[in-house]
Amino acid sequence: MSFDYDAVVIGGGSAGYAAARTLTAGGARTALVESGPELGGLCILRGCMPTKALLHAAELRHAFREAARWGITADNVRVDWAKLFARKDELIADFAGYRRQQLEAGKFRLIRSRVRFADNHTLELADGSRLSAAHFVIATGSVVPPPPIPGLVEAGYLTSDDALRLRELPASVAVLGGGAVALEFAQFFARLGSDVTVIQRSAQVLRDTDEDVARELEKALRREGIRLLTGTQNLRAERVGTGVRLTFEHQGTSQSVDVATVLHGLGRRPNTDSLDLAQAKVLNEAGRILTDPRQRTSAPHIYAAGDCCGPHEIVHVAIQQGETAARNILNPAAASEMDYRILLSVVFTDPAVATVGLSEKAARAEGRKVLVATYPFNDHGKSMILGCQDGFVKLLADAVTGEIVGGACVGPQGGELIHEIAAAMGRRMTVRELAALPHYHPTLAEIWTYPAEELADQLP
Ligand SMILES: Cc1cc2nc3c(=O)[nH]c(=O)nc-3n(C[C@H](O)[C@H](O)[C@H](O)COP(=O)(O)OP(=O)(O)OC[C@H]3O[C@@H](n4cnc5c(N)ncnc54)[C@H](O)[C@@H]3O)c2cc1C
Image (cartoon, rainbow, N blue to C red; front, side, top):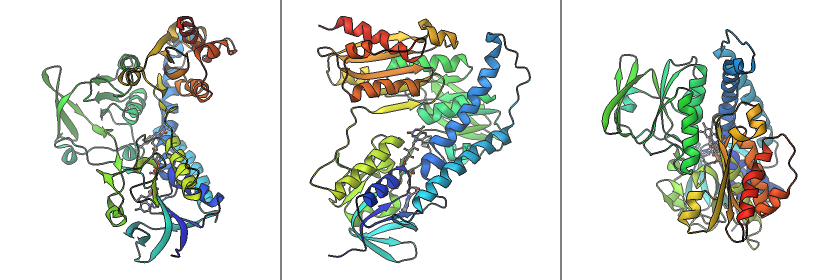
């Protein structure tokens, strides 16, 4: 059979662009179809980059407010909301412009349209025209679903997209959810001056993270004045005046909080409803496309990558999945598989929460024998100089071989520090080898040598 293209990629975000770039570099006749009004994808336009731009400003404001500890007077620190958001918008325009150039560079054909599957080798575009391909990579990302909270749709709420377009700081915000996006926004609003309440159903924030790590962040957020309520139940909402009243059960009592606005940070769902996946015989569970480790769906010539399939909705995984899908289309004989052994995760709060590889919780659930050691930042030279009161690093090693199998860092620059452990795990280093590596003094990074030495001493 002859097709219009060797491969068509659906979606031009992080996963889709990575797939199209790899396919083209490998010589495949490729088209990428993108339906969004703007080019750039979630990470650049409404995800990682704009949120981190805002968080940096919040961190600066916080540093000024704390400056007296260092004998520095920073009176009358004010925030110009319009300027703060304008800078964020300028940065995003810059990042998006670069991505637009890459997409429009002509290496593959870029088609601006929404598409759906007409059959398992054919896509139908919005204008009714069709294109066919031998292979497809679905990379259509995720959307915010309506919140599963009775009354909230009627009462009104913000999504993370809306929060990135706010024209002024809300006097008070209730943030629903205890994941990365929810907590980053909670700290942003609180540090700029909003009265913030976080409402979370699970017993701890960052549900899948080790409890000691999550509790350390909770402690720091509470000390900054964020009202953090975990283990809440039966949450419901109603409009009261210009604001929203949230009612819920917490620690056995019925409580309520009145806020100016509510941020829905309860997570996203795969954006696959309009693709007509059944026409292509692509199986999904509640919209999440099922793939094997090669990123192949139930239809062997159709692959998926990024948030539309998961299981980890983060950018570097989306990129790796897109590249893996493309490599398998180009060269099916040399199967390339996703490997999550060195899975990284970073929550850009302050203290940041960064993890890599196995958590203690996951290691115990797997029945794996590991040694665990921690070391606190408040007893470490460089972090004491920085005035850090919170956090610790945690190292996990195989109990017999001493190979590093996981790490966590809740503390200053956690998102940077965790990469030392990722690199060590990449080379399958042992705690003895990590402890013996030179570390400059005084640096934050040298903190890893303490748990590494402690674990090395415990090895048989
Ligand atoms: C507020 C926020 C902060 C975040 N911060 C971080 C962070 O700090 N670090 C991190 O790693 N991750 C972060 N993430 C997650 C990260 O942004 C996503 O995991 C990543 O961008 C997903 O990439 P993707 O390519 O799968 O999807 P997307 O980038 O969403 O791309 C999907 C594309 O497909 C297009 N599309 C959809 N349907 C169709 C169709 N039918 N036809 C044609 N085109 C279609 C869409 O228009 C879109 O451009 C954050 C997310 C949010 C919401």
